Length: 254
Ligand code: MG
Image 1 (cartoon, protein in one colour):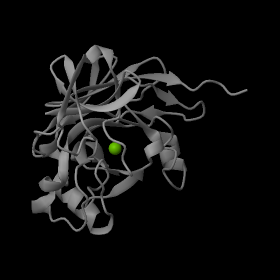
Image 2 (cartoon, helix red, strand yellow):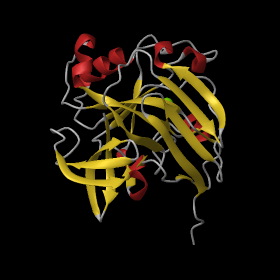
Image 3 (cartoon, helix red, strand yellow):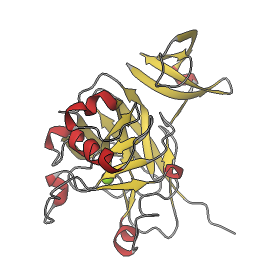
């Protein structure tokens, strides 16, 4: 099942996506998903980020193809991205004027469905609501030069997710591809992860309580590509769909 958050008829609603139409359901995405009977063409709704997370965690260097000469981390190494950075399908990624090089990082994203603390690897699937596509937008010069990644990874619009959540996917082998203006720049699947999605989430919950809607970016493969104002970047996750965002320059101030 594909579950989305949309803006339609002046309201924000949770919907189930079926083909080219969306069916409104009562309450949020983690309830019974009981249909209201209302439906709209997909083309007539604005897709929003599929959840409103209390926090977003992302795993650094989790594909050998991305590690290059760096040693593979011995255990999952999560970092935090802030919710202010979140955008949905179709919204622009805004590059600050002084950001320097900014790259796309196409990733499979796990969506937490139940409060999770001290969850063993074997039980992680019970706490994952589904999977979506994500772009962990990264300003490389800020990432290398700042003491913390607060703006390199969490500047406004630097976390894109969507277009919706697929609830019927297992984590073992999910293909993910990134394209810039239609040209493929990254391709891998989650069987190539250094640390499995289950082991990453289990480790996080040892220290951090995950809440419904929280998002876990699972790592990016290969060599990432720069995104400049004027391009469109797409992250495709098989079984989910294509997350697409135009890239624009920040408006000059005063
Ligand atoms: Mg990343």
